Image 1: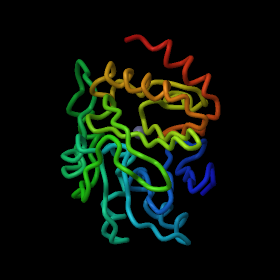
Image 2 (image 1 turned 45 degrees about the vertical axis):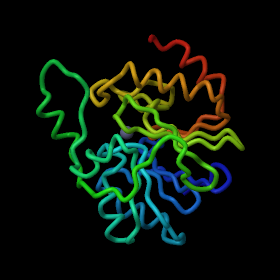
Image 3 (image 1 turned 45 degrees about the horizontal axis):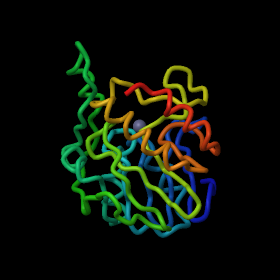
Image 4 (image 1 turned 180 degrees about the horizontal axis):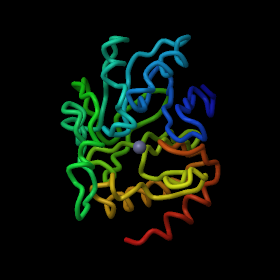
Amino acid sequence: MQMVARDLYQLALTPRSGVNAYLVGDVLVDSGYPLHFKRLLGETASRTIHAHALTHAHPDHAGSSKKLKTTLGIPVWVGAGDADALRSGRAEPGEVPFGRAALKSLMKFPGVEPDRELREGDELAAGFVALETPGHSPGHMAFWREEDATLICGDVLFNISFATTAAGLNTPPGLFTPDPAQNRASARRLAALQPKLVLFGHGPPLRDAGALSAFAERLAG
Ligand SMILES: [Zn+2]
């Protein structure tokens, strides 16, 4: 677990920050895949966690959420638009011409009942508030702290290549993004905040507000 800002730690669950979770004050944001459960518990063992929040209900972010809730006895928070997906453990894939059934099975994870539905402006912890950033999922949430311009952007943007794992800004794969145009609008909204530090679901932290704006400007409508 690595401190990246005040009251904020990155938990890189795979090499090269391929899959990340974050500890924000006493709230654990995202939980990786089911296989990451032990690692999450180990890395946060010295901390008291009071709640678990999700950027979105996909298997690589909510995979260990059910076990976290039952093991630690903590509430789970998710964007209102993702509450059904979290409950059922079935997320909507992107639009694909064929292979949709196989893709749907890739999007399954252990479902868990949400205890709080997050909406725009809701407080998370440590000065962060929730921003509704739909597109990659209907209820996708980013978390923003204005005081030091720090942004947890979830999967609105990746800072890693899905194909090569090299660092660099990318939009999330269309296979897993039901509404790419809406996601691009969310990306432009986040870039307009001019964050000094951006933390991604996938990829290493980015401390270059100019790079984010330049990338968002190039995104087609
Ligand atoms: Zn993801």
